[in-house]
Image (cartoon, rainbow, N blue to C red):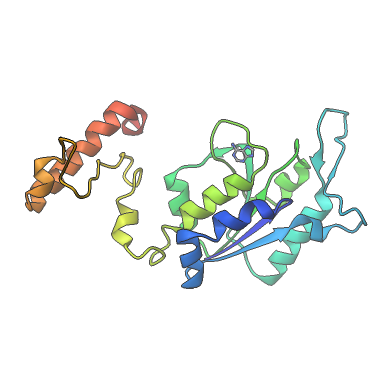
Length: 225
Ligand code: ADE
């Protein structure tokens, strides 16, 4: 899978995209992630990517031309399945959307910035608008990292242990059951006996029950869904 991220602050993306699973997925060829600096698509000396809004509201607006040029260049090189814009007023991101995106071949993520973006870009170029939650970030870069991370980790083969991605929280709309590791007792705090029993049917039953119990207690809205 190929992910092209368009941003005015490429520095913000460097570390999160080049460590851990994302790094390994790129090294093993499961994912290609490219970061494009929007300022490289400007045509003035000061590399301007924003301007004052028509109508005189406060704040700056991302200009249409650099975004158009960058997206059109990428589109001339390959087909894209989705052109995503990160914005607090997009659809709320969740595991279902991550699963859907992970099946795609090429996606673009355009990181929103400033007060917003010239709306014509959203109307004519963007195919999906995604928010990572009902709060406002300084820019869409962190949202782009969240999307890239959550998508790449579930590409088949990207993490060594595929079963692990499938038993993640939310994969079946349930929270994950508790997990433990050695020692079996610490400070008098014990690991549940069933996990030490070696009885896999019982262990699975316990994990199911715990997933339901935790979801009912902490996220009943997931069960209603
Ligand atoms: N940009 C600013 N806030 C955001 C959010 N909550 N989700 C996605 N992009 C954003």
